[in-house]
Image (cartoon, rainbow, N blue to C red):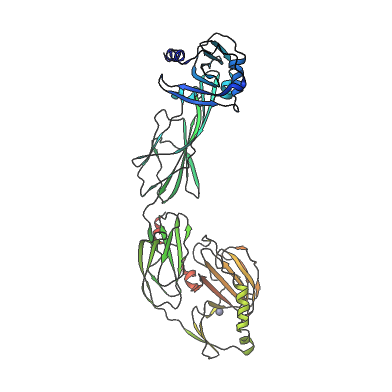
Amino acid sequence: MKIMRLFTMILFLSIVTGCSPALTLDDLVQATVYFPESDENLIPVDTLTREDGLPDLYTHLLEAPVKAQSIKPDLVYLLNLDTIRGMMKYDLSFDLTNKEARAQNINGTYVIPFEWVDTYLNKLPIRNHFSYLMPSKPQIIINDTAIDYAFNQDWKLHPTDNVTYDIKDQTTHHETYYTETDVIDISLEFDRRPPNQLILAIDNGREENSHIIDDMGHLPVPKKSGRYTYTLMAIWDDTTLDYTGKINYTFGLDLRLEEALHLNKTTFEPGDSIGVLIEQPFGLDYRIETPIFKNTIGIFHHQDELVALVPIDSRTTPGTYSLSLYEDSTNRLIETIEYQITEKIFETQQLSVNASTASLRSDENAKKDAEKFKNAKAHSVGEKLWDGPFVQPVEGRISTEYSVIRYVNSGAESSRHTAIDIAAPQGTPIKAAHNGIVTFSSDLIISGNVVVLDHGLGLFTTYVHMHKIYVEDGQEVKKGDIIGEVGTTGYSTGPHLHFAVSKSGVNLNPWKFMAEDPLVFPTWKQIP
Ligand SMILES: [Zn+2]
């Protein structure tokens, strides 16, 4: 019935060209192919210019026309050939089964090599005829909203036994990320038969999980805040059907659940550190503020969450303080938590050193050491290399405790001892307090042989006055590895290890780190 309508239209549209002198190649302008969707609606599907095959078409249609029998067409298009003498209109018919093609106007029927279909006719019009064999586009619904998605298809159409059409197609736009504060359901609705296999890959920016899904009605919903890219790989591989193919549908989801702020404890001492946990973070756009530490507090990814370690200087005034979490770019206050800093009395110590040892401690030497040491704690890896409590690097008598207030040679000069001193015989092995990377392994005038280990997230341990150093810069060490020997190099009154823990330039109480890992949180213990 459709064919009948077409012929009526062709009779109406065609003009007689037979009486004109023969056209030459130079007379051609362009050719346009239309798909006749209805009598009223002609959809242009392809335009041929000189560059893409017009002369070739001209050869077939005009220079060597062969009068032929018409065929029983599977596909019918209209062809308008623009020439400088006017428009020539043809009816293009294709018999896909027998691979034959014809052009017809009122002058007659001409054979066109079937290859011409493949070569010059874009495959695009094919789909208009076989829409019932084209890929199914599912509806993807997040909560109650049907979302837009990108797709990439590799489709093969077998309308007849000997014909296969490859129909490759893809969206050109970049995928959009749908922002939701809560996702109850992601459902999938195919308007036609679902594929034989549906594989789902979910990428959260750090890892990609892919698996065959059994439930074609619902997709898994993420439980953690984050940016997720969903890719559905649908495979239609039943070769008894008139089509096979593979299509990827991709969409993005930004899940922004409400953040939660936790501290590792509620009561701290001077020299302690505050472990901060941000649950359900989205990205890294956060800022932590607390009055006891004025500098920027580094925030780091740890598993699916964010952590920070706030150092408490040993001279911090006891009292009640608060710590606030902000969204950095907007200054939105997310949550505030209060904590206590209790009083801790530090001992005083009189120290006598002889003149030659004291002379080592000149300003000039301090300047030289500072120059050599300046990069030792300049960079830290953004990964928590330690897990669990630190070990005491050397066993022995504690000759000076952490933060003891020192008076040298009964003078007025007083200073805080920034570490613990562990007295031990020269040559005693020194263990790495935890897993880390060596960032300094050299001798200084005042400190003697020194090793610094970076444990990540800005946390360092320092080993001073060593007799021998066994490690070198950049070396990775494990907790308990021997990194050197106890000595009395530099400004020292006898063999001992001066062992310091520091974060963001603040020397902390090493015993606290040996007692417990400050970045372990009560909420984590609920996870089996
Ligand atoms: Zn010391």
